[in-house]
Length: 384
Image 1: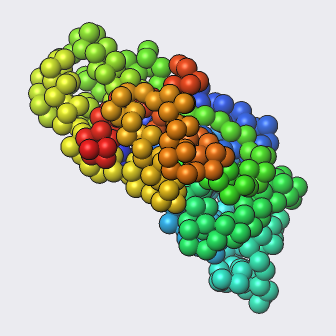
Image 2: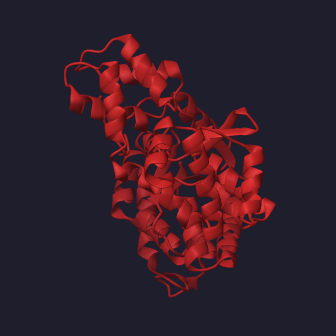
């Protein structure tokens, strides 16, 4: 197993997350649509690709990344392109020759994906929802199709930003209606995931009902024992004792594969022979210099909130980066300082929790950073 910092881990690079993957498959077996819920960098996309690469019997999986979709038309264009692409059709041969033949036939019927809808070879133009229903209904399939939609929340946020809140609400209602359509539910399961929280995005526009049919499954950080074995596997080429691994994990604290690998990458650059406490401290300092690994934590907040909301969120994080914690009473004072509506402020704090910045797990009235490494980076590069 090799270091894989910031990239999707596949095949031998993927660290087993059997508990989480089995929970997702069990939910698929029960017939529900799924939201994979976890902060960025936890490994949601790697989990999805594991399921894509190794589907259970009775299923075939399509994967589509919609992060760059700025409007509903682009979303559907990406989805139909994936389902009718030769790459996906050829891949289905491994699981179902009949499905591949059916997909090829349907691909030939989809003549054009335009802003007005989907145009079929017979000249019929249908809106996206009707076209998708037609496509799925005509699909001759002996296995259930799982459509994994990565960065769905980002697509929704893009629609809010570049079109309107109303357009985003309409898009979400359409997606829900399709998920509930018996003709589609019989043949298709949707799995959504992304690097920002869908629940937070829809809450900000008052559209929570549009996703209340999704079964939310969380991908947590590694427990200490698994993180220890994971770290040991990555250190097979250098000398390291158990105490050093324990020291490393205690320093990282938020035990997601990304931070473990990031620090180990820097530690190996310092010494290819051994891992010591001193090297770990130096590696953490070096890791903080990689702006590309952290800048998105700031930029995502700017994209998500209006200036007043962003400044409120930023000041919360500034205080925690300096003082290590912030009390709920202090957050209340910041709400008044920034002249924010309390409900809006509450959703902003919820977003900071859901998207992996902070937590109040130890005490409901005290918030702290999930990651000490992110806290240090924020203090050095944003707060000061």
